[in-house]
Each structure stands twice: as C-alpha cells, then as structure tokens.
Image 1 (cartoon, rainbow, N blue to C red):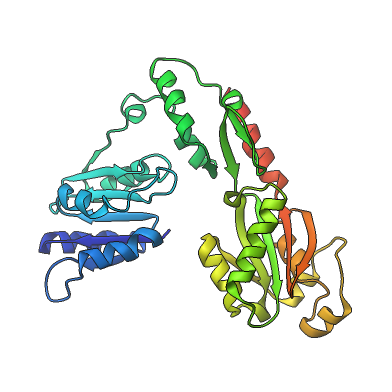
Image 2: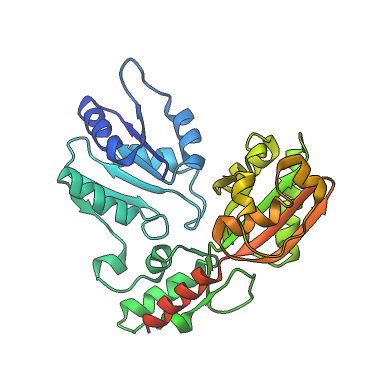
Length: 317
C-alpha cells in the first residue's frame, strides 16, 4: 500500500514520522526548513497513493483535496489527525477506500479517538461496499450502494447473493456489479515497442472479450523483458503489479501452449505470454496467444478465486 503523510507543526511532524514507519509511508513536512509546496505534494500524492494522511486542521485537508475528489470508487482513502494525536478522522473513501478501517487501525496505534461518520458503521449494520472490499472485489456501479445501505439501515436483512452479480465479464444488470481481480495478462513484445501501441492492443483485447479492466490482477512477462519501457508503462498506467518470470520458471508450467521454436531459441522458452499468464495466477487460459505487430497477449483466469467469493456471498445469506 502506498501511503503519503504530511504534517504542518512540530508536534505533527513527530507524529507523522512515528506512524510513517509501520505504514511504510512517504512523509513530508508542510513547515520548516524542508517545507514542501502543498499543491505540488497533493498533485503527486493523489494519483499515486492508496492512503493520504493529513496531520493538522481538517480545513487544510478539505481545501487541498477538493479539486481532486472525483468518485468514491477511485478516490484514495483520506484521513486527518490533529497534531496532538487526540482525534483520527476518516474523511474520504471510508468503505471502498478503507479509510474507516485505516482510521481504526491508526487510532489504536497512537491512542487517539477514531472519528467515523458513515451511518452503517455508526449503527453497526452490514455495509455491502465494505464487504466487497474485504473480498477483494471492485464495485462497478457504485450508485447501487446507496439503496442497499438504506434498506440495511431500515433493518432489512441483505441477501448478498441476490443483490450482487460477481463476474469478470461486463454485465447489464440491476444488481450491484462486483468484479474479482481474477485475471492475469501475459505479455510479450519486440524491443522498443511503442508504449501507446501496446496499451491500445491491451485495451482492445479486453474489450473484444467483454472483460472488465478492473478484473486484471497482474501483468506478467519474462525476465528478459523486465526493462521493456512499453510493458513497464502499461503496468503503471493500469495500476497493476508486473510479475517477472525466468525462462526456467515458465518451462515448469504444465499445459498445452502455442509453442514457437524461434521464441524458444531466442529467450529459452517456447511461449512467453501464455505461460506467464498461467503462472501468474495458476489459472486456465481464456485467451490463447494473440499477436499484433510484434506484440503478443494471453489471458488466464483464476476460477478458484471467483468460486470462493461466490461461496462467501452465499454464506452471507
């Protein structure tokens, strides 16, 4: 988890440095000799952080993040802690961003009072978006959450299995769409491939199969491509981890693959994209090697993970 922390007083800086250690966070000071410019800091922190912590006044945090707040499914978690460490406040993305959970955790560390204002948490009723995050699911149509939460607050028992549609394939449904990160994408490409062309190929491939981009858990390739700019940029743009495997590791994968003697002679294994996709999640191929202008792609799905989530949803009934 990438965490960014900023503080504005001496006491706040001491507290910020203290909590930055267990959070493995980047700490910045908004005061003193090494003061950072707040606008530049938030422009860097906002798109690159899962959790942002302001140690200081709530007003500073609100004014700073206001231009960047976009959507509850995409905004990072934002927490405010007063500089004496008395209050730890969940400010933004309480459920999907896990700000409420982080608030409880940090408050416990520093002996602060957690301040959480979401109704479902305060009334101790089931929050379907919190459950989804706990299961590693991405909420697509977040507008459905409000109605479900309202019924939960009115005392209605929420049948998760009946309320949701859990799948990696794009759906048109009245249910809450929850997407498991169950896909691994195997990638191969020529040296110095244009990053924009690889990104277009990647997105076109997902669209052709009617797959949610949000379902991708990782991109995988062979170690000889670990410095390939197009692949590195793709993983960064899609905000998914890049898995790197050696030819020896890829050769251990069992199954039927689209082999190439030329590829094996060049990199030591007969197929990069299919083998790396399967090895990344130990799933099954739903797309065998597809090639375009020196680029190759394959997709594997982790069926076990999807079934486990569906079983969990049924269990909640």
